Every structure is written in C-alpha cells, then in structure tokens.
Length: 102
Image 1 (cartoon, rainbow, N blue to C red):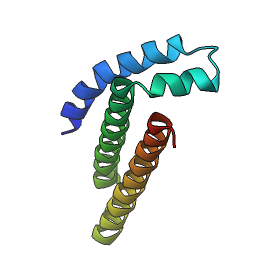
Image 2 (image 1 turned 135 degrees about the vertical axis):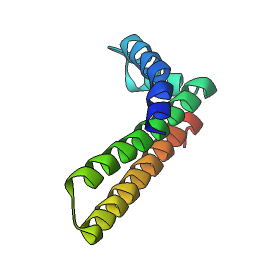
Image 3 (image 1 turned 120 degrees about the vertical axis):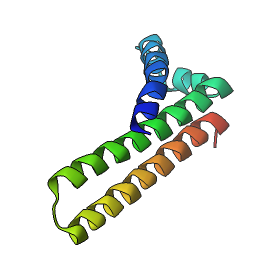
Image 4 (image 1 turned 180 degrees about the vertical axis):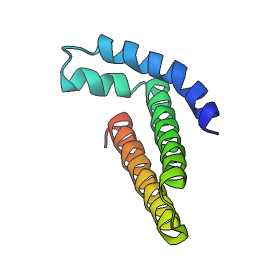
C-alpha cells in the first residue's frame, strides 16, 4: 500500500506544485476562488488523504523496526493512526469549508 500511495502522490504533488506556483502573490480571495473549483477541491482532498495514509504506513514501518516491546509497538501504531486520521479529518474539513464557502 505504501508503494501505491507513493505512485498516487506523484501526479498529485506535481499538480499541487503547479497550482501553488500559480497562486504565488495571490490574495486570500483568489485562493478561495481557486478552491471553489470542484476539481481543485477534489484533488486537494485526495492529496491530503494519500499523504497522511502514506505517512501512517511509513511511520508504522519505522515503529515496527525500532520499537521492540509488543505493547509499546501497538500503542505507538495506534497513536500514529489516530493522529493521522485526525489530521486527515481536519484537512478535509478545511478544504470543504473553503470549497463550499462556509
């Protein structure tokens, strides 16, 4: 899954870099107008989900490699997963707020 998310993130990262360069010097209103585009909002949500899922998978590998106690290992993985889920939720809600104008 980590390789799949890495592959998915390549075009999303390129899209995001081009979009961010295009918004250099833009004000908040221009950024919100850009986010009102359904395609931009959808791609941003996909990028957020892919990025944090990839992060959670990568950190899980690090935890499995370097934490040796079974209880500590499970606890650390749970904390990472919950933290990444909360960050995805926060990011998606922020995008929706901008995209829907709430």
